[in-house]
Length: 384
Length: 237
Image (cartoon, rainbow over the protein chains, first blue to last red):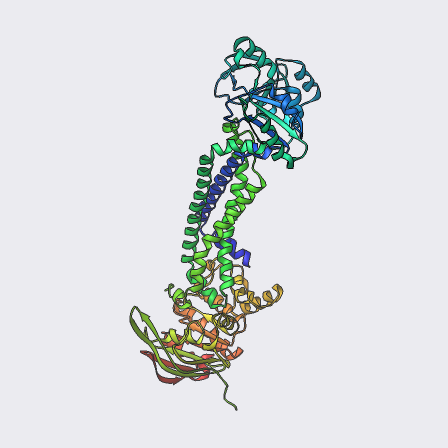
């Protein structure tokens, strides 16, 4: 009886209920999309390994470090392995085809990043070919690349044409692994720099080290930075997580704005559902008076109103959550190159549900108070 | 033969309403005793206080002064929660405009008071079927109020009032929204409830024909009980 009443009352005015459900669905959908975008911003942070440290120039990331540092870093106590990466900033055909591309020391790089899974034959082919490169599965699918294809990158930081051969397509080991990057031999870059811009040769953007125990990170970082103290290129060593977080912090204002918009959306839908509930209860005040007359107490009446609000918000919430998945696929088509990892997380789904429940609770609060406090004779007086 | 025991005892009850700073007296020093199994009609002009008195007896409102005892319970001493539980157990209501819940069927409307009891679903079904049979609507139990005539809706309302087997039935202008034939049928039914089931009925009405069905008729005028008219018992059957 209780459930029948909830359902029938919730959809008594079908158009109004439907519009409210759609409103909740759109709000939950928007909330879910925005939360996923924020998560995507932090994807690099989530994917960071606890035992990897990044060494960069102490002044700025835009300054590179001498490649000669590599052996000195390797000699520091606690360092298990070392590699390096250089942001290349190459363009594929057109600037709008943006993706991250790096010059790396391939063997040590692939050892340091086991999350980039490459078939053994492709790995071997990549290591042997100085003009070879590997790309993530997402990137290869995006541009229709196949192993053996020539990928002509146009240099921006390092001018000129940089044709390279695709030797492998890696897959991400984890969901959070970015499959939209390209890596090629640092030697290829360095050799040409030696010819054309010798002063820019023998440099690396960053060094990446692996340490035996994550808890030794502060000590090892201190030791590395101490080695290069008072040199021409002092270093700043930090965990990979802190390094990635540094990028996120740069766009903190945008993230704050997105979060604010999410909250505003929830606030608006709260007002919409509250309005629906107030109207609905007001129209039926005499019915609630009848319930009170029959002996239904505050607990039952609150249950009826809250239940009705929950039915509407649950329907809208479920619709919104269901819609988030296809909407994300569509969104990925537009921003997939900027946000390579665009997956809705269980935490976001939990927040969606929480938002829907919160909206239901807040929307029901005022009508519940009204129904509980109204005198039966006053409410019955509304009829004839 | 022993006289029937007093079921409703009203002593020196007064009630007034506030409109802004103005206090409007509605009932003044009302005393009235109603015997178990009695069918009492309250008549009076609009604003005379008859519905207010009915509300006080049924525990829908509280008196400013005096005491109302129903079945030995001083209802003025009950908390809101206790009063709600008391109403559920002891009072059946029949309203002028039926006040059925439109999204529920006739059966479900009648079942409403029983939802608050400890009865099983099966027991509730049996009770509801019994009272719907009593009011002659057993074949309409799955109809929604919209699918029923005014007279049938009022019968459903009577079934709902009866289903929990209350001590007291209170009816506020029960024939006010019915045509003459339906009103007559309803009054016959109420008479049967009184004579066959021994229900105590208090009815507020403007209709002298309806009032004649009662055992006793009391007039209210400007918040004061004015006269006593006894109606012969056979008339109410």
